[in-house]
Length: 105
Image 1 (cartoon, rainbow, N blue to C red):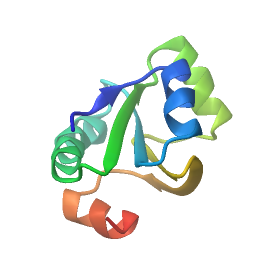
Image 2 (image 1 turned 180 degrees about the horizontal axis):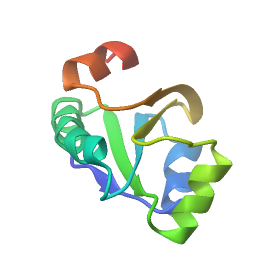
Image 3 (image 1 turned 60 degrees about the vertical axis):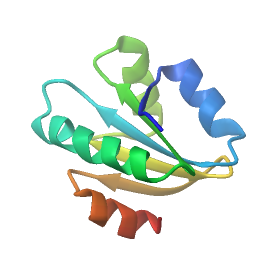
Image 4 (image 1 turned 90 degrees about the vertical axis):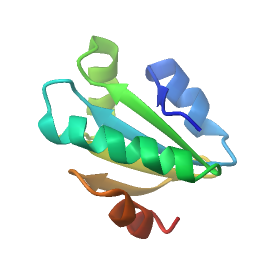
């Protein structure tokens, strides 16, 4: 499955009642670790059909407000949801295998 590019509205719809696991990445184009993580997330999405991966660019003003409301203080910030509930938060660059282990995929 490809990585989805989300905004506040699509994030809320996706995480609210989703039966599949959802991983959301808060990122910015000026963030080196964020850009490096992008390839790992694409590989993760390709290898796990039961996982939806979405990205939210915090350079957009509406997305900055969403990130602030969720308590994002550092990027890349990963929010992992199962059955509409936030179950894990991770910060920083990680390789695909480390993400799989931390998210128990």
